[in-house]
Length: 291
Image 1 (cartoon, helix red, strand yellow):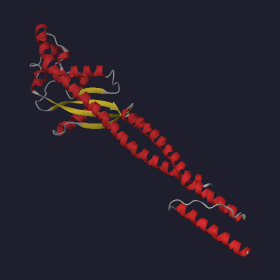
Image 2: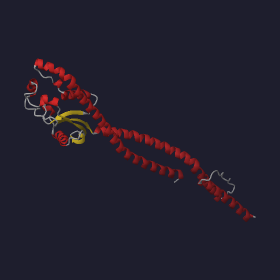
Image 3: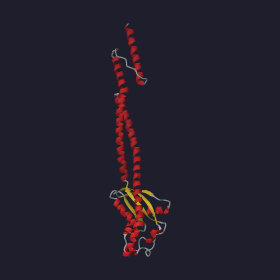
Image 4: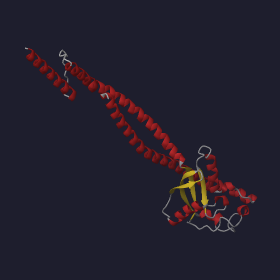
């Protein structure tokens, strides 16, 4: 096996192991980064929903209440939770993978009732008042899902509709009945805002970034290997090959091989200088024997 082939195999093995180690490390890093990016998007959507709630409570509901009292009817658009949920439905046109729900243990609208795992999240917020956010994962029929949840604490404005049926707007009671959404207590956690996204999203983002990274690293490694071959050929392989050919010629009796130019003090130069001395010594010895 030629020296160049051996060097190439060694370099290829080193680059290959380096790429493998880099890929393993980068895979974890990029997946963690993609997960953080998805959570940041979920937090942004959560804050947007909270802003819609505030806007509805402070500006939309006061206007609609006048019409509700006049017409003895109930407008769902006056409910902050309804407004936030509807806004998110429009947002899903651009973010179809995300879902949003204001899950409550005792909601006015039965569609908002918390299912088992959502009720567990609400219980965690109730048991730990210092917890302002919870990030979790769960298995679903469509795969692993990542979710971000925030607690919703009952404030004085909430008691207008959720304390007793006799206090709540009559039109609302007629719409939803008097059995749901009442008996809330001031300061307790009544529900949780939950944004969910499939784990396939951060995993896909990480895989795409990893693929791009590995392509660029492989290209850089290939270019580096090519440059190493050029430098190695000029600095080592070519001089060693010439020395090998000269030694072969001398072994066949051809003593007219020219000396090699010596430049520098590296190992190849030292080898060339030693070869020249050996060549001169051999020529002198042959001449002495012939004389």
